Length: 382
Image (cartoon, rainbow, N blue to C red; front, top):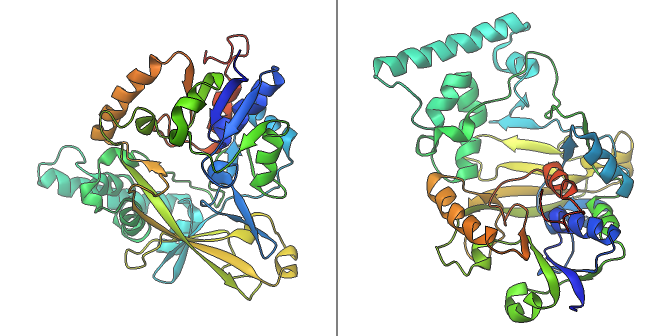
């Protein structure tokens, strides 16, 4: 008998949730992570008494009561509501696109006026494309213009998107922006989900709760002693890069990554909001995160005399960088399909999570996916 039922490679939400549920079924688990900390990309570092999201802003949101009850059984969540602001050349606009945005953009005060303005601009785009004998959007720019018109596209979409992807919008496929959230109400709540918030005390509390009672090892790279790790457990749960697991035999999948520049400021309130997007192309970062606003409200903000911000820079991924966002174009999706076929033939390995499935996930769907794994089937997916 091997010493563990499961070796779980990666301590992010997929791996930690899997280990938590497996332990409840009496399984012997070992979780390893190549980083110096547990929690994957939800890890927070305490700086000046503030929980800093080291890998970018993470806001938990879901309409699934089972998922919400599950995470709150681990740690209580606060009332944080995501209401980002867009900054375009010093002018501020509410997100997502709603009546506040349209008032700020055009001075309209009723939904009828806003709809008329949008439809007027969309009609101009359609007429121009028809004149040029273009029957369907050929790229992201044309798709966005058809959905929302030129004012919002030029000020709030174009520059931000080009920074995010490192390419002109005319070079990006139309499907990236198949739809845009447009709300004809004065509501700045970014998510439509019924539940949202941040763990009280930070995301490390969630990780610690999920991994309580489970053996963990950090600073351990599965690939540095692969033969040993592959023989230590009856089954492996692998949450790393699927192409790396198969030694890049078909080639490397592509990613976008994010670089962060942290600053500590001797003031209690830097920007008045957790998330401010900078949508003009000339500013190199995509957004600024002020971390204290995730967990401090009202007078609490001013009880802490300092604040920590992170500027986010989107860039092409290269070896040695953290892979963040899969580039789900035709080339990469075809390549992933070949790796997925190999993975499906590995009966003693479960591939799960953002990197193993080459798919962008929010946090709640990851937990929901693991919750739907049946203990009756020995944790093989239904």
